[in-house]
Amino acid sequence: MARLFPHPILSIVIALVWILLVNDISAGAMALGILLGWAIPKLTSRYWPDRPRIRRPLAVLEYFGIVLKDIAVSNVQVAYLVLFRRGDTLRSHYVTVPLDLTTAEAITALAGTITLTPGTVSADLSADGRSLLVHCLETADPAATVAQIKERYERRLKEIFE
Amino acid sequence: MIVAEVAISLLILVGAFFLFVGSLGLAKLPDLMRRLHGPTKATTLGIGSMLIASMLYFWAIEESPSIHELLITLFLFLTAPVTAQMIAKAHILRERHARESIPGTGRPVGWATLDAAKADEHSEHTQIPSGP
Image (cartoon, rainbow over all chains, first blue to last red; front, side):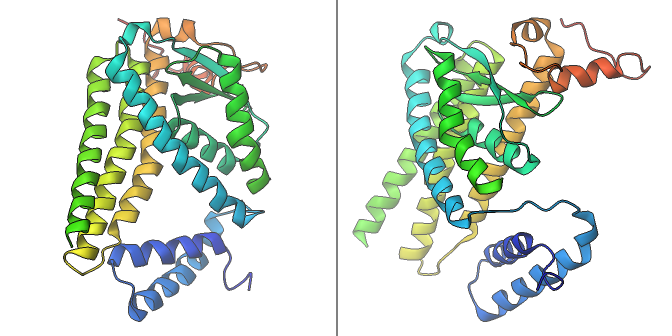
């Protein structure tokens, strides 16, 4: 099994993206998707020395749900700030988020999540990859924002990836 | 049919509203880092509503289901944060006041953007621009 599908997550992603690309849920599209999902990871497996491991696949779905909900909430919040507040009265801060995550995939997912969710944009990573620079649009308590990011997203990503 | 049409119209209006707010934020907010918040967030929900409306339209009215839209959403979610981060990094590298206003890393090393620039300082090709 491991020799046939050296990178199972990539295989699933390729098959799904293929079916979405041809915009057709038919037997033919699925067969070609599965074929591509088998062939591409097998041909390129030597370029993937470190594969991310998903420890709890169900937690991924839960995480997606939370992030989608937060994206909706953050849109409403940012819309409110843009429409009804003067730009220069917003209390914007940079904050430093120390990371417990160590794998590149988990940190990438966290940085992406931070940018898509309420009032925060991730701006930079420390040179050793152990802390993240985050810009908050409007925050009364920067420490609470950091705590929320760690509790809400980082803890879940740690369960998924590490 | 009429229900689907009302739902599609509402989704398009909601999408248009959030896209407008995202662009307004880009134009109205005073500095680059605050401006970044508009296009990275308000537009994701705007585009999302538009794409759901599109899927609903092809499914209910044209009766030929379309799933392309999920892929557009996926690529948008993958690219928006990367773009925002590259703009922020360029901003930190170019503007002296941005470099001075960011907090420390809490680690023995600095931020990746600036450390890399420092390492390159002695090479003849790259230098930290001193800002306008």
